[in-house]
Amino acid sequence: MRLSLRERKIAKKKEDILRSAAKLLSEKDDHKTTMEDIAAELLMTKGSIYYYFKNKEDLLYQCHTMILEQSIERIEKISLTDGSPADKLKKAMTEHIQFAIQEKSLFNIMVNPEQSLSAHYLEDVKKKRAQYEKYFDQFIAEGIASGDFPSLDTKMVRMIILPALNGVNQWYSPRGEKDEREIAELMSNYLLRILV
Amino acid sequence: MRLSLRERKIAKKKEDILRSAAKLLSEKDDHKTTMEDIAAELLMTKGSIYYYFKNKEDLLYQCHTMILEQSIERIEKISLTDGSPADKLKKAMTEHIQFAIQEKSLFNIMVNPEQSLSAHYLEDVKKKRAQYEKYFDQFIAEGIASGDFPSLDTKMVRMIILPALNGVNQWYSPRGEKDEREIAELMSNYLLRILV
DNA sequence: TTATTTTTTAAACTTCAAGTCAATTTTTTC
DNA sequence: GAAAAAATTGACTTGAAGTTTAAAAAATAA
Image (cartoon, rainbow over all chains, first blue to last red; front, top):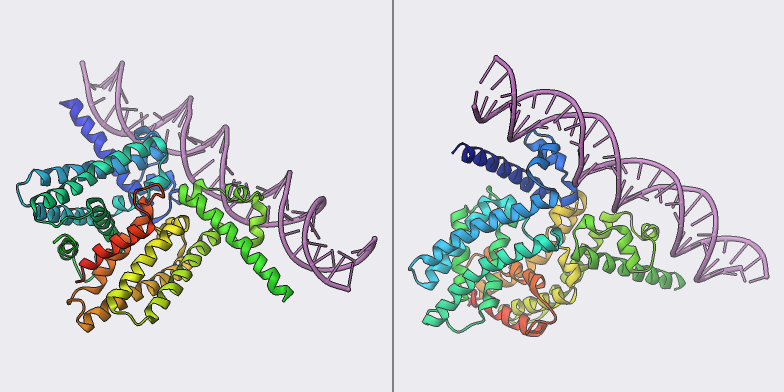
């Protein structure tokens, strides 16, 4: 119990650091964001970051896993729903968009893992991404099988959908004319047109 | 005349350097690609790069402009064609995809200019990007005006199309089952479904 | 060939950030 | 409240990469 409390405290601190890292890394390039900057954001010194993380790359890697694991959890839940394939796909898209906007910084640093992560970490990140992408393929395939969607190239369609969804947090601004829900609704509807 | 010959020689050398830079920068992150690496690729020493370019950021910036200016030229030509809006849009999409694949490295480093370029350069790059994007908006708007496309949110549609097109060079592999033309054809057809 | 200009080089210079660590402070435990 | 464990500090080391520069080499011109 007590141990669990401490563990939760550490987990919280780790998450704080990850968010600080993500915030700064999403603004500037990797090497322009120093460990000192990341620490300063939290009124710490960089020394203590090394108490929680092995090194800078580990920090980046854990930003990836944090988002990826949550994303997988969310889409897993959707897949267990008993809606139509189109319903599931739509829900997956709108949730993705809203999550991406909500976690803008973290999503932002996830573009181009190839460039920023070395082989060891990259492998794992790619695996998790593939795991997430598979759900989209699954929903699309289901729709084709059931006749809800016409026969089409599942991967190609998914490779249109996902970059489009991820693109959102590159241009979204909270001061734009559309809010999260409107964007999610509009974009997912347009994307569904490809399939019906 | 003689001057022009020399100028062309310099221009060629500059392009060689830009391509070397792009090649390495597209593989690794900015700071992991050193000026020495870029020079070594061309059997030069890093000192001589500074004979042609002001600094590393200038190198990056000119990679952007090289591609952007060519892209704008290409789409400008398409816009002067007298095909239907759908024809022009389709041509713009297929050309974009094929150009992106052809110039994979250069396109690759163009994701996230915000992170790698400082304000001064960034402004110019953004202007050029906007210039390019405007053509897509134009084709879509034309189609709506002529009744070829239904009424829809031009910007939103463009913000689906372009990220999808740019996504291609993240996953394209020359050893994949589809070649450039097939990908361009298939993807542009799917994207057009949103509009018709 | 000689003189002049252009280009390349190699080394030096500078700057700066990642990572380490022993000492200190804070928190927890009993 | 004292002892033990956990967390934080900040100075230090290290290495690396961008940039500068003076001199050498190569190309061009006369």
